Structures are given as structure tokens and as C-alpha cells.
Image: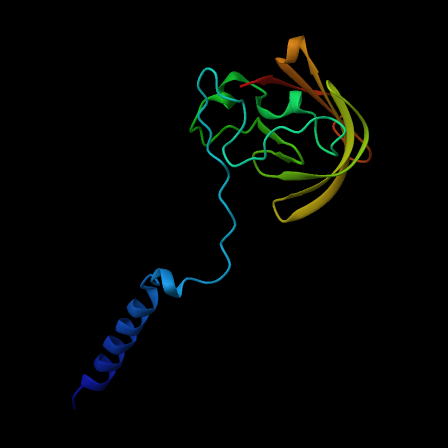
Length: 165
């Protein structure tokens, strides 16, 4: 009795699996791009305090977060170190979006806005969940500190104080 047939089938299956794993050529790439990775930021003196690819700062009144608040902020100094995978207190503020370690918030409505503060509603997503949160953002100490306060059910009771990266 010979066992060549099962061995031949296993070999053929393995070759098919390997062929399926080959990368497609640029002409064969799907029409839709995958979701972009979180921006990696390296700042140097004189460069804006924001991640590459984010919209340029928008002025208050443009239905956007005021420019003074946009950029990278950390709860602790280590959050601002480039390339850290454990920067759990890093907050990236874009004109209409907040990016946290494991969640993101999209601006849905501005209730009050001035150059140094804003109260707005945000739609959050993260870790397979979604929720709404009303928050204020305010810059203090000459624009070096950002204070975030949450309102509503399940909101944090104390404000979050971030330092500009």
C-alpha cells in the first residue's frame, strides 16, 4: 500500500496556501486603502506641535478646535518622548479630532468657543465601543498647559492636565 496520494494532496495544499500569501502587485491592489496608522511624530525646535498629515490649525469660529489647543500634549513628560509605545497619556488634538492611546473622538458640535477655550460635544470610538461626551478644553500658563474636563454620565470627576509636547 502506498501513501503517495495523501502526501501529494498535502504538498499541493501547502503550495496553494503559499501562493495565496504572495503579495499582490500594485496593479492588483484593492481599490480602497487600509485605515491609516496612528501618526508618529517627531518634533524639533521651530516646527509646529502637531502630527504630520493632520489638518493645519484652524481658527476658532471655523467649527473647529481653536488653534492654540491643537498639537501633541502629554499627561506626564514620558508621553511626549517620540517612538514610545506606552505613551498612554498622549493626546493629539487636530482641528476636528482628538486622538488618545486607545480611542479617538470626532468633534460633533461646538457649544462655546474662544481662542483659549472651547466647550463641545464629541463622538468617541475605541476598544470596540462608542460613546458621546461633552467636554471643555482650555489652555493655561501661556499655552503650555491644556486642561480637559468631561461632563455627563460616566464622566471623569477630576480635570485632566496635559503639558505641551
